[in-house]
Length: 435
Image (tube, rainbow, N blue to C red; front, side):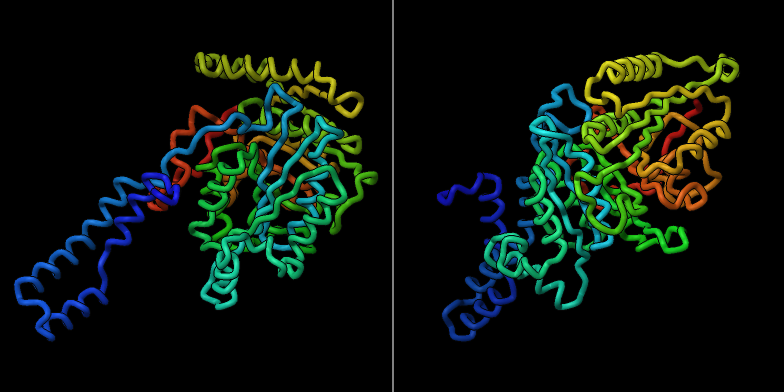
């Protein structure tokens, strides 16, 4: 406490330092052999060594809980009333394969001038293995208390150089960081960093990448589980990026950015957050945004007369309508924004409408859109009913997809980090509704 360590941390550190190990017992045995300690003193000291060691765990657990809920902050979503406020994004990536699309997406999200202030924390997720090189990198990163990217050796990290070069060319603050951890626990680093940096959205790479023939190939089940855990525990909005080469294999110059972005809107919290992100992108002069609002046909609504919507559903629908009205009056879109309403009677109509737009560069869609599943089966429920269709090889091989999960403060009752045993596999399933 004299060194300004907080009380809880100081108390926990004191109990941890009071534990006794094998060296303590060896010293006591030497003392007894040399007649420094009699049998009574030896027995007392051995019992005290065992007692203080065993009592440490329950005491530390009781007084020190790093997983307790963190202090709240204001901007946890893209959707906000103050459009002039700084937007903070935690962009995660596995390898150099993700970097060009990620930088092009950041470039598209930066807006213009002071109103488009953007701060990006670029996190390189590295799996900690038993190889000595990975262990050495951890020690190198922690030896002097400085992050690995601040050392002289950072020039050898090509991934960091790419983001540093982009920062110098654009009015975007980029803070590279590296998370070296086991895949079973790296989600804790992501969640904790997102809270500490007070970000509004976490961007995660999809656990599959596109091969030359257009099919999607998994890079590992571990990264799939990382995305699922982050979606469950994130303290802000989350976006999963299905990379199909947005802007090509290299960074696009700002003056050459010309992307067509489509936001399918079915209603709900996630769709509103996806649309808010699309409105952020349309501030860029090279972005054209098309908003497709799907409306159920009147004949379709009659089929569901018996199951009348409850008060919560009515309030949700009113919120959607108000949000769309604000969108139509938003001056940010100008001539780059197109709004269309499509009346649909079945999921075949939805499929046909979406496929008519599959030549665009990027789809931004809500994760739990209020629509039935548009594909028969999928091993990626975290993408939601619409995201699963848009990310399939049969739909498109050129359009990237950003699946957005909006932050719901009412559902955020968990601590920042929980034990892995609490991770329920069945909770990954997505609730799907009918248009």
